[in-house]
Length: 143
Image 1 (cartoon, rainbow, N blue to C red):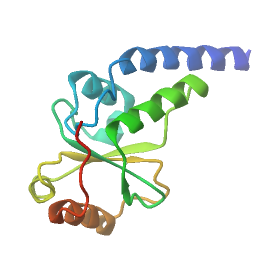
Image 2: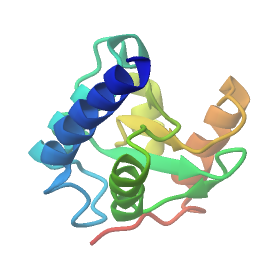
Image 3: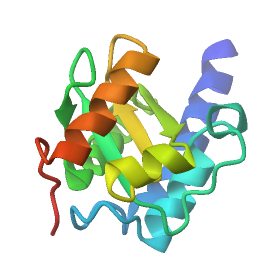
Image 4: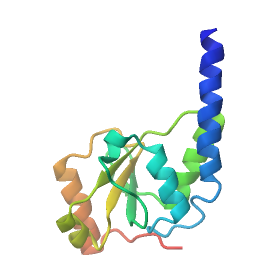
C-alpha cells in the first residue's frame, strides 16, 4: 500500500512539473520567460524563495561542487526535465535572491540559482560570484 501511494505521488508530481516544463529552457538568455518564471515559482518551496518572484528576472545558474561554473539555462532546464522523467524527483537546486547592491554590482542579475552544488554558497563565495560577473571574468550565455 505504501508503494502504491508513493507511486501516485510520484506520477502526480511528474505530470505537474512536466506540463510547465514544455516551453522552458529553449534559449540561454539569462532573463526568464514567463513560462520559466511560472515553473520556478512553483518548483521551489516558499521557504526557499522567501517571497521572491521569478517573473521577468535575470538569473545566473551556477554548478560544480563549489558553484564555480556557470551553467547555460537550457542545460539547467534539460536536467530538470530528465530528472523528473527518469526518477520523478527534483534536482538539487536552490535560488539565492540578490540584494539591490549585488544586483547593481553583478550587471543586473536578480538571483543566483545553484545546481548540484555540494557546498553551501557562503557569503564569501557569493561575493566571489558577484566580483567575477562585475569584472567580466565570466561571460554570460546569451541565445
